[in-house]
Image 1 (cartoon, rainbow, N blue to C red):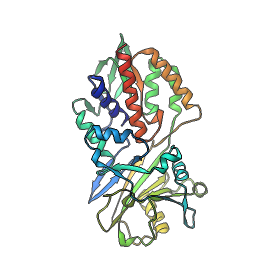
Image 2 (cartoon, rainbow, N blue to C red):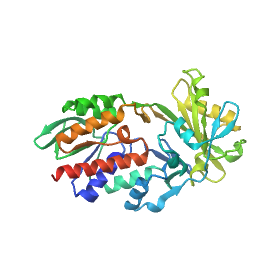
Image 3 (cartoon, rainbow, N blue to C red):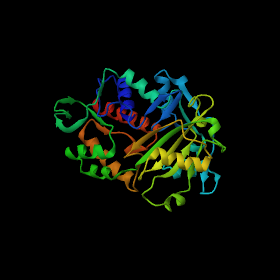
Image 4 (cartoon, rainbow, N blue to C red):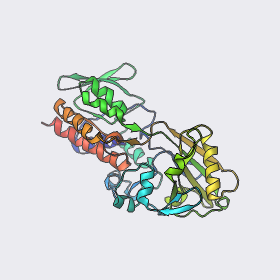
Length: 350
């Protein structure tokens, strides 16, 4: 999302000719929405902080501002091992590794009517002529005042400026290869693995009360369990949290599991059946594996990133953007990408 936002900013305000190299077979990174049997299933983030304006503003620019939807159900519970007890939303966010101020979390979340992939699709359409899907970057070298880029598969191209909207572990070796020694520290950013499982049920199968938007599991309870089995970290009541996520008379739940042994779908259903008093098997389930999920910054991250960016400023039009640097939320990625684009525009007109 950071790369798409950067490219949009460059074409919209910078008047630049842009090429986006996307190593995967689709754009959007961890933003992944599927539509099945009337359900809207999110594999990655299901929303963005309502208190952060970046994604809402971007939606307006793309002509999909009317597709932004507000959170319906509010409030989060804590599963203590015996009961679901109310918990302050800021604490719930911290348990999930979401770094946000209390006021930002209190403002709730927003999403899109067709899911979080909607702005990705809109950006991809606007940038269609510039997108190179399935084309990664294998190396960088200086070429006069600009850059020579080696593309996976053996081809190469040149550019006046570059934005590396890559995970920190992907950007680090490329930057080291052009003399940014401090970039080695970026490889130390930890991307926490996770598994998300979406499960569909008929409403009459849910005997427990789905209060609020979901629950998190007491971290002490999780820590007390063996490391090998799959265990539950949290659950979102997707069909309650945002409108249009499930057909009438149905419920969509999304479980977050710590990686381990076993079948994630069976483990998720077993956990949720015990907590929410579910009857029968799910109508279907969908598992998403994220070997490298949300990044977690170490204590010296900001200083080390500042050192890297100081070195990049001396080298000419090159910048980094994305979740590995300036915040892991979708809005933070949009902000990071657009700021990188503005930096490149300023560098190229000097």
